[in-house]
Amino acid sequence: MAAALPVTFDDVREAAARLRGVAHRTPVLTSRTLNARVGSQVFIKCENFQRVGAFKIRGAYNAAARLSPEQLAKGIAAYSSGNHAQATALAARELGTSAVILMPEDAPRSKREATAGYGAEIVTYDRYTQDRTALGEALAADRGLALIPPYDHPHVIAGQGTAALELLEETGPLDALVVPVGGGGLIAGSAVAAKTLQPGMRIIGVEPEAGDDTKRSLESGARVTVPVPHTVADGQALPTPGEITFSINQRLVDAITLVSDAEIVSAMRFAFERLKIVLEPSGATSLAALLTGHLDLPPRVGIIASGGNIDTQRFTQLVSGG
Image (cartoon, rainbow, N blue to C red; front, side):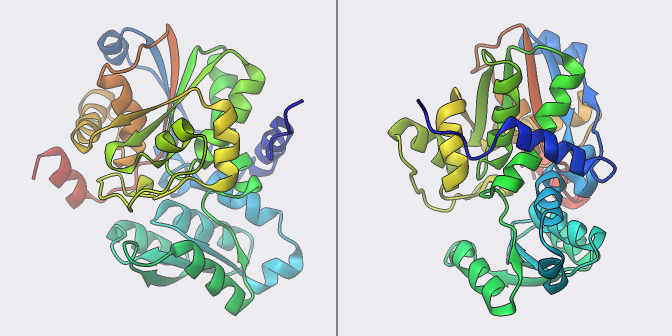
């Protein structure tokens, strides 16, 4: 008998109850133009309309809300390139505590400003020469803070899975679910929810070509580390999958596909011009995977557009080819 997964469907359902009234139940968008373009009926879970502009509030709040009053009184810490940073800062504010966030020096300015705007203290590091996990753990230990990692935590994973749970509650049966992959928390939680409700559904992850650590890891059967990728998809610029997330994804994810930076930007442009929504690069990778035509799509497909945190200057520069 296979060992039990570290996150269960009950964990996801409990997270959904905990998030009620805190996280938005984001809309599901459909488009006849997109359907005709890809030859399938597509349902887009628009987490770009989520609080803090991305799905991350689901996991951050679920984990923070489960801390003891004593832990909350001391404060919480996190490390993140941006969206988890904002989510943890907001979760701390909602729960009446403080947050210290470790962010890369080259994190998008809009994400740093938003994180500070929620009241968090920001500490920076160099993502290409320093180990953020080690730095974050040391920071939390030195200050006596509860550390909420961006993906490799059961409560975070369960929270992220509520996005897929909501999607399926609205759409009914789907043949496949396409999800962006960074550290693997969103796809792990989504896979737990989706495979429980529909065991035959295909779960497909999407990574940028420059950061294919999860694809390589699943193919090799063990976690693989790649150089920190240089990609427009900053939220997916990670060198290795999480330990917990990989243990789930190894069992539940059916395939990983890759998209180039150019394909990501093209998807951002399509989303803006034809769907009338703004997606950040990491939030557009699932859409990019459909638009490339690389996937053999079944009749009914759900995708998660994971976030829309991008400032006007960078968005304009990217989609205009500057």
